Picture 1: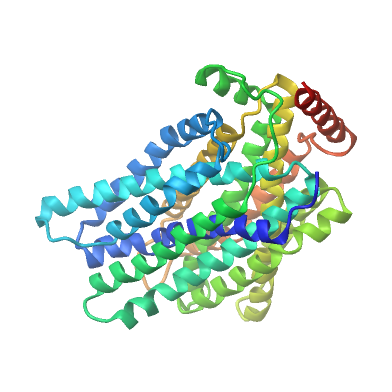
Picture 2: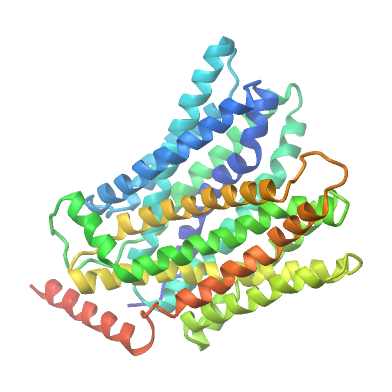
Length: 450
């Protein structure tokens, strides 16, 4: 297959940048907006967020199954970007609008707009994540495509969250108005980026089972029979838990262990800048070495670096910054590799069972990702409770201090080590995967020649 142009790689990446503009602002500001701007009780907001995650468990796989069965002149997955872009931007703006509907009316309005926004996010994001699998089946080009994706989406997401509050202040007036206009501007940008993604990408990879018809239930069973998809799913859970547990523990670490909550921004910046730089390393390293070996060895190094933070004394803050920067760089370097591994499991499933389940494979993996986030949040809460953490206390007891330190260091290290062990069961590498790829190409060529 021919090389993918830089124009198409950038266009594809803008799709994820659009999703991050919306999703990152939801992650960072939505709770604050609902409680402090719109005046909704925090307990209701927490319940709303939980219900949305439960709904994701149902809707994401369904959208993937439907997308797999979509047949249009634009392909399977691109039409969702075309028809979802404008509704996605409009509903995002409405979600940050604050009509005065009374106490009950506010709750209903927030529940409806947020739920619809999350449904539209899945409607756009599930097909988008699947789209990369159909642009190319060349392993090196897949790495390059995903590298461009995560560099641009990382920058886009970071800039949108950093710029939102200055934009709100620049608009002036009441904060509610500033949020609505600010998010409205970002939503227009996101919609345009999705349309550019649609216009500049092409679905080239055709399945050897095009036209194959089966029930959704059988497709889900076929996916679960894919042993390498299951391995990739476990690695995906571990990957998000490594990141989210460290991120969740960071604010406690700087507040109580280092004694200065203001250091959180500096630590987060060191990690984020390292993450953006790290993505660019994936392509040159995997061009020279087996991507699975790179992934495995990186997890091992991250395990050791995480443990090293446990032993750095408080006065060694510069060393902490450096190690945090390197951890962010190496962790994010694995992200493009991980998404390519998911594409490889789709190829493997088609080779093994004759079914190319692109949409449901990526949709179910997105659910696995969200499951990892949920488990991480629970583990953080359980560990803090177990070590008798006292919220808001000026000083924490020795068990709590040890627990906080472990959240930032030892616990992520344990999941990095677990990833190293699980990688030993992932077999889509070397000569075996070359055989899978060659036989698939032969099948597709035979179908095209009919």
